[in-house]
Structure formats: structure tokens, C-alpha cells
Length: 125
Picture 1 (spheres, one colour):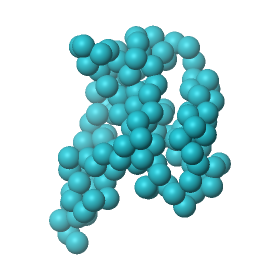
Picture 2: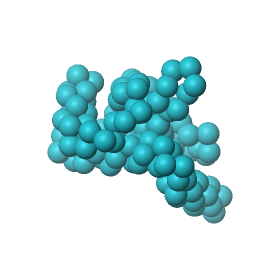
Picture 3: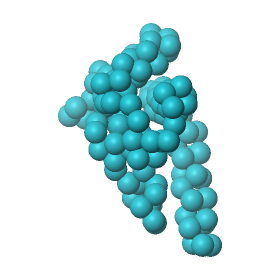
């Protein structure tokens, strides 16, 4: 697994791929936290939060990627494969930001469906 410094470098490169318009209203920018939070719906210690979009009245809007979660979930990937996963998560969180500003909740609904499917799988085990 790459270092947190290299993770930050790659994230910077991935952020540059996105149009400047996507950043409108993202006053907190893109952050990295060295944590590995589990989703509240977790059943087996295997449903890590990889990133999140935060919209907080006191701290503003930002995107967070959790280096610790990537380290746990994707430790077996090489750097190119990890970059692909980072890109997916970053764009997912940007979509939350863009949809939120537009008053659209499609991705939130998709996320909720993914959690329902996860719970159904775990309940069936």
C-alpha cells in the first residue's frame, strides 16, 4: 500500500481531472483522513466508508477520502489499480456535491439501495 503522502499526490492529480465548475460551493475542498470508519449499517466489520461528502452549516461543504479505509480494503492493489478506485470514490462524492446543489437526490437513492442489498446479503448468510 502506498504512503499517505503518495495517496495525497494521486488525489491531487485526480482532482485536476475534474472541471472547475464542479468545485463551485465546495468551500472546504478535498480532505484526507487517516481513519477507517465503518458504515452504520455494517454487520461484519467489512463495510468501510471510503469517502463522504459533507455539507455542514458550520464548516461548509467538503469531500473526504479515508486513507485508512483504502489501506484496509485495497491493500492488495498496485498503484494504478488503487488510482482507479480512488477516482471512482472521488467522482462519487463529487456527484453528491453537484446533485446536492441542484436539489437532486438520485445518488442518495442509489446509495440507499446498495445498503439495502448489503443488509439482505448479510441477513441471508
